[in-house]
Image (cartoon, rainbow, N blue to C red; front, side):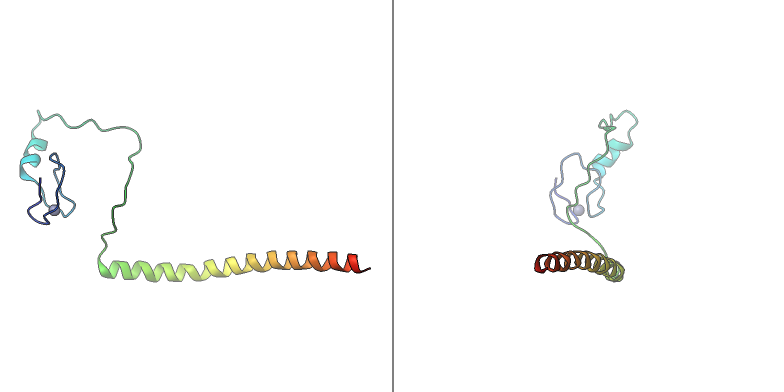
Length: 101
Ligand SMILES: [Zn+2]
């Protein structure tokens, strides 16, 4: 079944296309109380990200937040790196001084 709005091919039982187009024939079937709905599984639904459809300015806001969040993250990482480097170099200097004695 091809969507008349965005021209992509949807499965025949699709009620609503990804673009928001509602297939009238399936929507009627869905609203019919005698229509047997597909059995919904109780297991957690798997979410497959096919692509992020985000308005441009939402994306900009998201990227700004992301960049701001990266600043404290970098500080934390550099502090951890500094501690590790201090321990490693301190340990090596200790070993070298032991060998040289
Ligand atoms: Zn569509």
